[in-house]
Image (tube, rainbow, N blue to C red):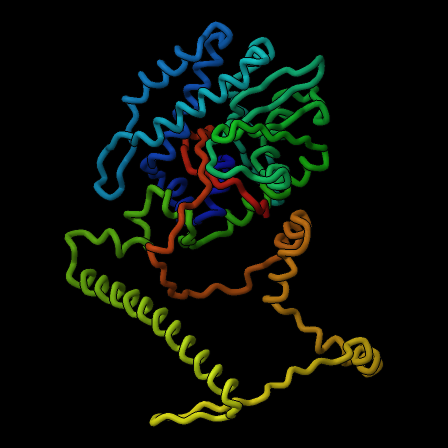
Amino acid sequence: MRISHSLIEAFKQCPYRYKLLVVDKLTEPKSQEAVFGSFIHYVLHWFYNNHPKSIPLEELLAFYTQKWDELRYIDLSTKTEARLDNVHFEAGKEILTNFYTTNKKNDFCEYAVLDLEKRFEVVLNDEDNETHILSGVIDRIDKTGENSFELIDYKTNKKLPSLAEVKRNPQLGLYALGIKQTWPHIKIEDLKFSLYFLKFNEKISVNKLEEDLKKVKENILGTIQIIKKTKKFDPKPTPLCNWCGFKDICPVFKGRYVQNGSKSQEEVGKLVDQYFELESQKTDLEGQIKALKTDIEAYCKNNKVDRVYGENGYFTKTDLEEDSYDWFKVRDLLRPLGKWQKILTVNRTKLSEVLREIPEDVRFEIEKTKKINKTCKIIQATNYKELSPFQNGDVKDDKDGLKMDEEDVILEG
């Protein structure tokens, strides 16, 4: 199997999208965010490929502006090419200006840059003795000392991740494998792996150990085994669907992209709108009911009465006892009888509360133990008015020429 980090993430995010890309070999239409991210990578590659110390900021921005008018993305609503909007244009200018100003202080590390857009391949053998080729591209490699190097990957994310998230980023583990296979003499301890978050002009760096490479290989081969065994590539709806270029052929979005506006779709659309109208009324009514109950309760308290009557029913004020036990004594009494463990049931709600109170690295290890026992179809309602922008999206070229909105992966599993 020939695969890349982007394709592995595509499978994790949505098996159906992976199928369209790999099995059906379809080309995904590029979204505005995807084109923007790729273009910023392209401009920085041009900049470092043409002696950056000799290029003033005005020339960099002029090159950016000149090439901008050539950019097009696919508007999925009309399936036509469209120009990128001015918001992205201004964001790009700000990114490049900040990058230039910051890196000018060290002469853009011009004489330290060893390579740009370094392509690599890693050969892996799985438990079935099948060979897999994992490919990738490193944006920039700098020589920072006599025997030390820095691998830099540009990110156009709208979210700045934590150091813990960067440490877990599987893409950096892949880079470590790639550079070791390309230059075997380099010690992993002499490498620094950096993600440069251009929107924030922040670079977050981490180091890797040999034992980290072993975990990376295990995770990659584990995912490959899952892919090999997958018979049915079902879609997995997430907020990332908003950036997918296959919505018009995805079963999840079939109702939105029905051709020729069938009557049944129009009718179900009215049912959906009626549902949200009733939901809105329900919220208002619940607020009114709560206010009425508060007024009735206040009346009972002020007039020292326990029951009040209306034409259709009555309210009764009662005392609700809240009991508790001495759990240490209960434990000591139940343990000898072998019954203590029976009342210590695992509660998902309590676990969710605990997860919010513990360190991030422990949360991650707990999440890795999670297994999917059963999958069932449910129907959920999403109100457009309640949606907020999904604050993540990065674009990256890989060996196969795939451009995608990457999610900085939290779970490697």
